[in-house]
Structures are given as structure tokens and as C-alpha cells.
Amino acid sequence: MSRYSKGAIFLHWLMAVMIIGNLAGGFLHDFIPRGSPERTLVMDLHKSFGLTIIALTLVRLGWRLANPPPPLPAYFTSGERLLSKAAHLGFYGLMLALPLSGWVAADRNDRPLAFFWMPVPKFGVGKAMGSSANEMHELLGWAMLALLALHIIGIIKHLVMDRDNLLPRMGVGRPRA
Image 1 (cartoon, rainbow, N blue to C red):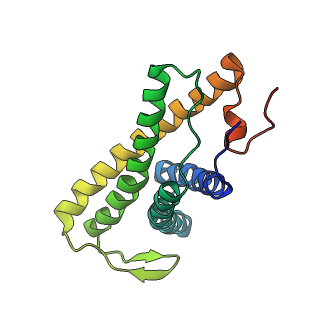
Image 2 (image 1 turned 60 degrees about the vertical axis):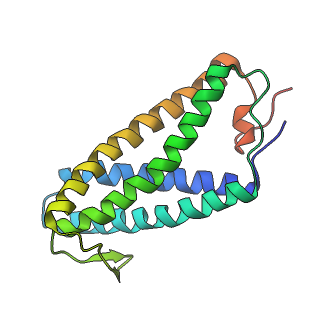
């Protein structure tokens, strides 16, 4: 059985945790009272992790170019191959577009943007463009959530229905005989 490299596995799981956490923070912050220290903390962390995700996505793309992924199993149908490639492209696109749109959206207000409490420059596109970017950011958040749900459904399909060795390729469990 061919596996992803240890670096790819580490980056996958680190980013999975960060993305899920950031989606939770982004979707749930509206339930925290405006102006409260808790909401400010959640949004400061959301922005900081979003900026981190941009950097890690670039590292991950570089890693993937230097360390090609293992080939898909021979038994995959052409449809499964297409879905796998589309999902990977979708994830990479969203891992860049979602936090970048949030960064641009920071221009919609006068609050400073920070990376773990260190100032970060804004794009300087103005409030109107920042507001449009915020709308896009929310739509991309829903797209990421949908793609993540499809990814999890695919994992369950391979684990329960196909009973194949895809999970050990990403460092989860032991290969079946």
C-alpha cells in the first residue's frame, strides 16, 4: 500500500483541525454578543488562523509539488478518479480563496487587522469592496463546509462500504490484509 509522505500527512491533519475550527468560529461568532470580549477573541483568532491557513496552503502546495501523492488505487473507477481530483482542486482553491476573501473583507470596517495581535496591513480596497469580499467570504465558507461534508461522506463510503485501505494512506489505522 502506498502512503502519503509524513509531511503531507502532518499538513493534512494540522490544516483539517484549523479549517474545521475556523469554520466553527466563523459560523458561530454571530451567537456571541457584539462588542463582547469573547466575540473579539473569537474573531481575532479566526483572522489569525485564516492568515495561517494561507501560508500553510502555500507550504502544502510546495510540498505536494516536491513530494507527489501516491497514485490512486487501480480499482478506482473513472468517476471516482474525477471526484478525487475535483475535491482536491476544490480544497486547494478554497484554502486560498476563503481566507484571502476574509483578508480583503477586513477593509469593510475601521478595526485593525492582526495576526496573533501583531498588526497586518489591509489591502486598501475600500469599504464597498470589503463588504463585497465579506459576502464572498461567507459564500466560500458554506462551499468549504459542503466540500468538507462530501469529503467525510467519501471517507465513510470507503471505510464502511468499500472496506478498502484509503484511510491508512493518510496515517489513520493499519492497512487491512
